[in-house]
Structure formats: structure tokens, C-alpha cells
Amino acid sequence: MGTGAVPLDSVAGPGRPGGVSTLVERLRRVHQKMVDAALVGDGFDRMAELAAEEAERPVAIVVPALDVVVVWPGVAAYRIGSTPTFTTGEIASQIERTREDPLTSGAIYFSFKSLRNDMGGIQQKLLDEVYRRDAVIPEFTWIQARKPSGPKVVVSKDRNFVRAKWTERGTRRAFWFVVYAKDKDGWTFSVLPASERSIALSADRKIEKIIVTSVDRVGKESSRR
Image (cartoon, rainbow, N blue to C red):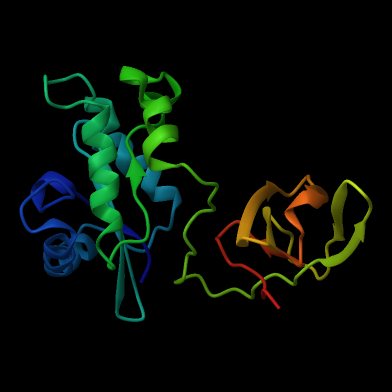
């Protein structure tokens, strides 16, 4: 089985009674309809096409694999300002609602233009309230692929900084690197693009340990050992 989608307003959504759990159960029941309509099995390229067809309705992406349904609720960012109550605060509330349910591992905005054009000041709202920390995409657990190898890391220290430099290993390329640092206050992390191969951390933090992992395009992360 592959990927399918169904309009959220035909079932349920983060802002509807029953929440995401109800959405999952109803999506299971309509899955056969998606198969019959040839909306399953076409992979992620079909997502964008379907989203365009559903321009007036947010969609939920459903990936039935190994008897598991992965749900990313659609968030209708294009509706910001359409009513007095559909504000950027409503979008932030919907994202937080999806995070409360263990059945969801992310959400999909429709459409990206709404974010790029900063409708209603959505960019600052998301930065201030929703995405305060760096993150990578959720792992696409239904894609059978090896995890990337962890990079080779060299750590050096001087009076002002603790520096880590790394080089990739293996054949699977990283799309991001995640740098985990343990200091006097505990663990923190930074997400860096694949073009970055080093980081300098303040010696005042009293760094005890640094771990660097590779994350590929489908969210698979190398071991944190």
C-alpha cells in the first residue's frame, strides 16, 4: 500500500469534535474508498496534485503500511482572516491539538503560500508559540530504508570554545546533522543543514559530551551512541 488522502471536512480534524482519534477511525473506514478511487499507491508525488485539487479543503495524508495508519492532519492556513475567529491563534491552537494525540506525528499546511506570504502575521506567531525549537521532519516509518551512518566526529577545546568537526561516513547522505551537547544544565540539541560540518560552543557551558547524528531526507536518524 502507498499514500492516500481524503478531505478533512468529510471526516474530522484537529478542531472538530472527537479530535484526531476520531479522524483516524473514520479514515480507516474510508480507506477502501481511497483504494477504489486510485488515490492509494501513487506515492508522495500524488500528494501535491491532490492538494491542488482540494484547494478549498484541507486534506489529511494517510499512509497505511504494516497495518499502521500515519495521520498528518491538514491545517488550513489559507483560511486565516476568512472569519473573525479564524486567526493565526486558531492555527497555533490546531497544531497544539495534534501534538496532544499520540496517533499524529506532524501536520501539513495548505498551502505553503499562506506561510510564505505571512498571512495575518503567521510567521511570527509560529516562531513565538509553535516552533520555538529547531526540529526535523517526522520519520517516514513506512519507507523501508537503512538509517544513515553516524559521522566521524573530532572534538577540540580551547579557552573560549568547545569545537566539534565531523565528516560523513557510509553511502547514505545526510540532509541534516543534529548536534547533541551535554553541559552543566543537561542535554540540548541543534539542527544544522547538511552543508554545515562544524559547531563552536561556549566553554562557559562546561560541555561534558557532544554527539553528532545524521538525519536523511525521510527523517531516519543515525545512532546516538
